[in-house]
Image 1 (tube, one colour):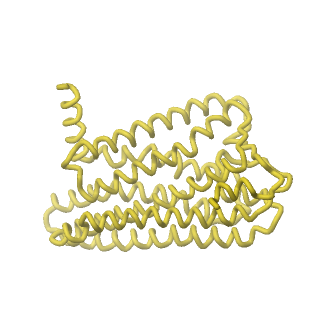
Image 2: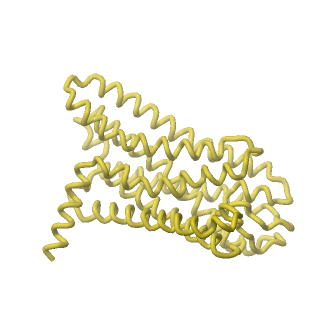
Image 3: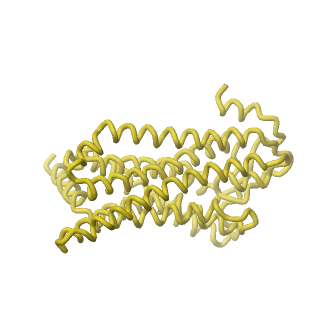
Length: 314
């Protein structure tokens, strides 16, 4: 029996939810609709553009860009899981069926956890490139990259399933108004008329593991990277090493900072604060990542010029 079928057979009296959206102020609905529509378009264009550049240019077929490809794919997917439904709430009452809500929650959790580990793999790749350059081809071989990618998506699946299975055991009696723009874990727990103790424990464990383990791995990787960079005598070499890591540090800080603020805080915290922090790591982050990794990246600039030149000649 699939989890979606389990959702359909759940004995909750609530068969659909109403997503209140980002704000209830009528004068802000239309401006916010166009703002987030613009963000979605920019996110789609940026991430799809980066994916096509990596696929079409052989000099980008390296471990670093392999993980960047997966990052762009993940950003593309979970932006599409959240923003289209969010836009509906700016125009009319946003009703979502129980099974659809559980589906959105599953993919939301799946792609967010994937992003945690993709960023971790990218940090490990930079560590291998800077600290062990002579062994880089072996350390980050195709087999290693493929195994890491499989592990990333398995972790995403396991984490998402843990949340969904625990959510499906809850009963929602009368309350069906979710004070959010997405079917997220914490807003749903507030509507349950049965005990959520197990769910809260699972949230703490799953989120704790999927934030703490990647954060520690990234911290250790960059501590070793910084130590190696400071040992480089050439100022040009140090500058080049810093530039390859700078964009990743920005993306990591942005994502993990907002995610930790959202989930590792007291349950009594403001709902409005939850919405704002969720926007940063699920909407703003995916829009900015293609630019963070491209603006000062010479390899991407060269790939873009080559691609544009080819398209003009055909």
